[in-house]
Image 1 (spheres, rainbow, N blue to C red):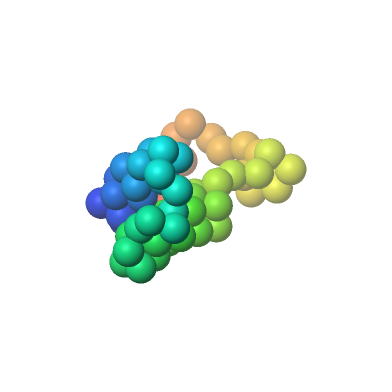
Image 2 (image 1 turned 90 degrees about the vertical axis):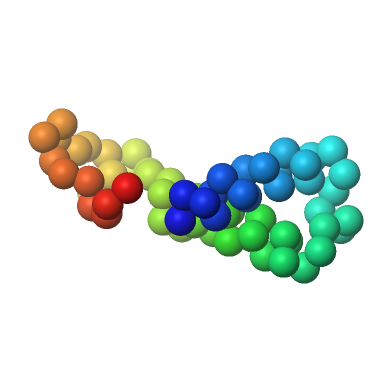
Length: 64
């Protein structure tokens, strides 16, 4: 997951300069997968009871 997110970050920086239309299909998929991971899995919401507060001693939900 970290490798995918790192690659998506690299590609998104490039996409800001040249646009995604110039990327091959594989790289567009990496960009989309990175965005979906960030927005769907990693993004927190302060309005959600489960995301609004976490005790400092709580273990991570998934291994990093």
